[in-house]
Image (tube, rainbow, N blue to C red; front, side):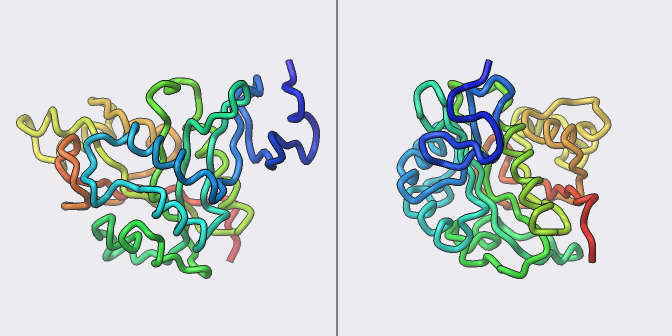
Length: 233
C-alpha cells in the first residue's frame, strides 16, 4: 500500500523531501530543520538517559548543527502522526588514523559542530538515536542508509564514528575493554550498539578511553569505520 504523497520521484511528506522510507511508507527520513530542534532534544533525552548533562545534545546544539552542516542532519517522521521519532547528526572532517582517540566533545566542538570542515573527506557520525517507543522497526537502518547515500553523493571516503559499547558496563568485571571488543567482533558476545554496527559493514579501528561520560560503556568509545566502495580520488 502506498502512503499518499510518497509515491514517485520527488516524493514528499508534509512539504518535506523524503530521502528514504520504510517499505510500507509508515516512516520517512527527511533533512532536519531548525523548527525540529525541541523534538530532536526530546528524542536525545529519551535515548541517552545515562549521558552527562554536558554531553547531551539540546535544542541549542541542534540549531548549531543546522548552521554548520544542514545536509548532515536527518530526522525520521512517523507518517501516521507526523511525530519526529528518530534522528542522526553528522559532520565532515579529515581523519588522522594514527591519532584517532579524541574525546567526543573535542571531536564535535563541544557538540556544536564548530569542528565541521566543509572539505573534510570523511563523514563523522556524532549521534544516532531512535526513541525507545519505536525501536525494533528498522528506523536506524533507514538512517544509516540515508547517511551512506549522502556519503556517495558527496564522494566522501566513508563514515567514521565513536560507537558506544553499551554492554561493557555489565561485563567490565569479567574482562578488559580490549577483550570485550574482540569477543564482540568474533561473535562470542553481543553488544546492543557495536554488534549492530558490525553487521552494517563497519570495522573496528581502535578503542577510545574517556570518549564520553556514560557508565553503561564505562566511558569508552570504539572507533569504527565504513569505507565508501564508490569513492573516487
